[in-house]
Length: 435
Image (tube, rainbow, N blue to C red; front, side):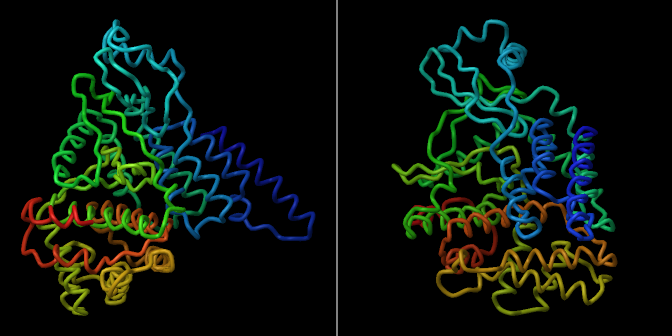
């Protein structure tokens, strides 16, 4: 972090000198948020990996208009690039988890990873009994560094000006650390993987890798290898296929919230792949899976029903039940939150296909959220569950916009809003297959 700070400061001095030479008065924020500094930060976060890189990935996905396009593009490298472990380190990790003679169970093991991300890297391997596997191996020391990494990145964001100085993010940092520790438990992720495979057994449009428990530990996750192409690659597919992909994902979110009570909350595009031959969506990475209570789903059902009916008082009651604000909140803040809810629920209220590629809804939501967050009188942070739900919905909106999809969200949500309570997977089986 010290090396990065020194490099960023040096770049600021050079950029400031150039502007002064041109007769301009440089602004500190402009000097800090330059392509050279973004590249410096990206390289350092990729080296640090772990929680530091995870936060960088989240910024890169949802920076939008907060950063110039060239900076967003540089930070976008964090979604796919990380410094891989050298073979000797891979050998040491697998020996510690599988024993000294682990290689005897495999065909020649490929030490070059097929993917390297924030918490671990993935190797493709074939066992002697013929299993084609994807082996996710956790970087040594990731769990121990989570607390310091999150604190360091929070400091970096403060210095960059991306977070207002008055915003109290302590509760968010505590939850981020807790969530990242859960993501670093590969046995827990394996359990979530198996749970989703069972929940989606009635939906052949989705593929969930099969867990291989005999090779899974808290630091190594073994699952069946699945191919496919990155979901972003479908941006050039025919309109009907792009619409179908997003329609499936929107329906899945409704099932997660209202039916399963369990949601994979990481919206990273890399967690979705697509098989053009079978037309199946491949779901990856269940480390950020979160359970929601039946009352949580019921409150959101009430909120959506009220919003679609234009019933503002009922919306307020549902928002209070969820915990967005209480009776003591200023009226202007209550109004601002309800206005944002109306914006966020636009696709649900739109008759027919909603065109995600032609809406500025995400930008308007971001602007409204930033304005509300900058108001120091509005100190209340909603329940953590709502933030993870928003994270998932925001990622889905961004993906739908990237694909330029047109989806009848109103039609998809109606069966879920009509249900009085979650009733298991069977009522939606035929509808999911029809999608």
